[in-house]
Amino acid sequence: MIPFFLFLLGLALGSFLNVVIYRLPRGLSLVRPGSFCPHCGHALRWYENLPLLSFLLQRGRCRGCGKPISLRYPMVELMSGLLILLAFKRFGWPAGGIFYLFFLLLLAATFIDLEHRIIPDEISLGGLVAGLILSPWNPLVTPFLAFTGALCGAGAFYLLGEFYSWIRGREGLGGGDHKLLALIGAFLGPWRLFPVIFLAAASGVLTALFLFLLYRKPLSGSTALPFGPFLAFGAGATLFLPQEVLLSLLPAIY
Image 1: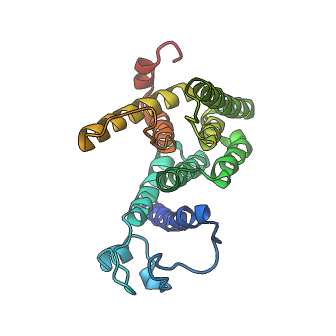
Image 2: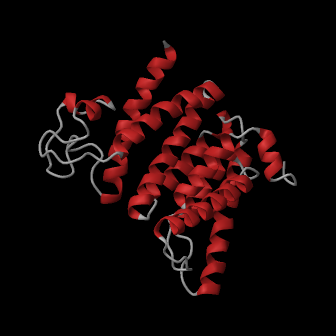
């Protein structure tokens, strides 16, 4: 029964994470008012706010105005429920709780960056502080490695962004990206930043090529893709890929 209740807890926390994703970049309170439809302002009753279930029963539409509910809501809830099972199965307690928090931070950063092209400091810097505080219980790092990982993550992307700006005369990496990589470094340590960046860059290039083939639009230096979601993907993949795969990707490091 424990996995079942963990999954329910993950769904509930995913529902709250949706509140964070919608309200935080808009400067709204996370507490008041209660949940409401973003289209018509209809205040949701408790039975309209059940994770996953309400979306299915209402066929993906608001009871007040009938407009479609974004698929992001059930996606985040389901991903949150599955990730809590994955984290605790892989790491147990308390490390499972630490990495589940890490996943929630990455999910929030991903969906906010996709919609608004920003990563709020409350997510990146708040997560960085959490990673440093929790490092004594993190099996992948020591407090020193967590601090070093955060410095390496922030410093590497800051220097890369400055170099790009000097070469191209415009910003290439947002400030939120190097703060997010500092967060990732605090949880994963400095050595795992190499596969994170490699996988993020590779997935970003593949996505750009896919979009080019899909829409037939020419790629240029001004083509903007938020990099936060790719960093989040790289971090998640690095955490769960077998050691043999990481060794084949970066043999000089592993």
